[in-house]
Image (cartoon, rainbow, N blue to C red; front, side, top):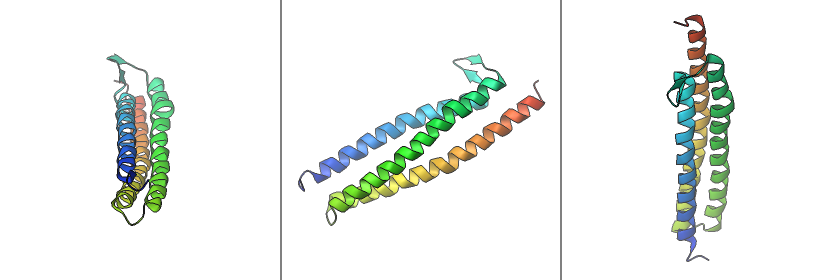
Amino acid sequence: MQEAAPVIVIALMVVIFSVSYASIVMINKRGDEAVQGIVRGEPISLRTRRMVLLTHYLPLASFLAGFLFIMSAGLFAVGKQFSGGPAGAVAYMGAVLCATGAVTWIALGGAWVVHTLVVLREAERDPG
């Protein structure tokens, strides 16, 4: 098992990166739609923009943060299993990277929600 450890860790990192990247693209698209009020080239109402923020963007961003935290814990366990070797070191680095991503998504996701709510409030006051 020790011989396959580097391959296992690299495979885990590729899967985690792929899922995270695909999620980020989707999350950012929903966030942009909520702020800009345009979905597939068509304008959407303020109410729908708020719904996109609360029922699409927020759950997706929360999912990604949770996923990254869980992957961080998993990579930490893998690192512990292969401690002392290069696979363990890479797994620990991946765990730190995933935890950092989770914390970043919590902070930036929260900031984006606040920003979007401010934009929507301003749009309600000045519909023109």
